[in-house]
Image (cartoon, rainbow, N blue to C red; front, side, top):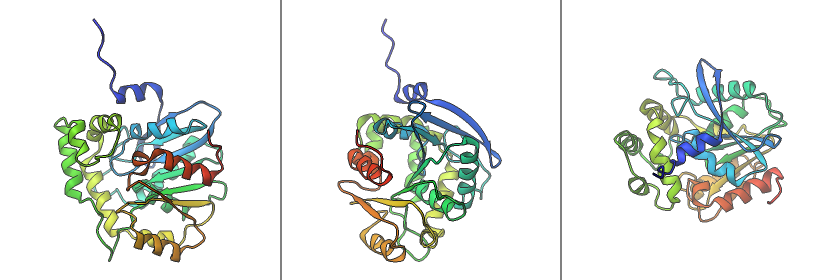
Length: 279
């Protein structure tokens, strides 16, 4: 009798190197992909993206040793107490995880909430030898338009995941994603804690990214989706005006979930900034 095919989640976990790192009062799971000896890259994911969801990006960047930590309250990382899901908390986690990994001048990439975390880390940590890539950080905040997906929508997706959601139901929220990534999200979304998601979403609207952005410097680029409602054109213009030293790179045919929407365009944008060869 032929065994059923392995799920994407199980296949990814089987290929990854797993580490558990005590840091900032929690146990943090880090998944690592790629051959030893490659240039180190740390990818900080978004609000409902356990580490497995970044594996397809690692596959598209084989020149890197690709490390993905689970954010607090997601995947295999510990759950914090209510009230401990602020940008300061996440940035302290990142600092502690980077110290524990003992990497030599890694590239640091953050997507969405992860981009906000990387920016917050950067303004409080010397990073002259660490290239930073901020991918579509939410530009919502105090006195600004709300984040385009409501907290209720996120929590409904978590409820559906715990009840056994399907790729077709996930497709309702992400109609252009590849089938494999829809199935993977259906498998891992339930590993996100509702308190972590709700408080992080609240931070999108109460924590001021632009105040952080004003202080970001060094070897940094911001990549935004050409169709992203999270970084709309008005926000792009303001970002450019407030910190003109940081290049802004537009990826066409992509919304907020840039690597999922246009992986080749995302890879080109990232490689062009960090000097990685086109393979």
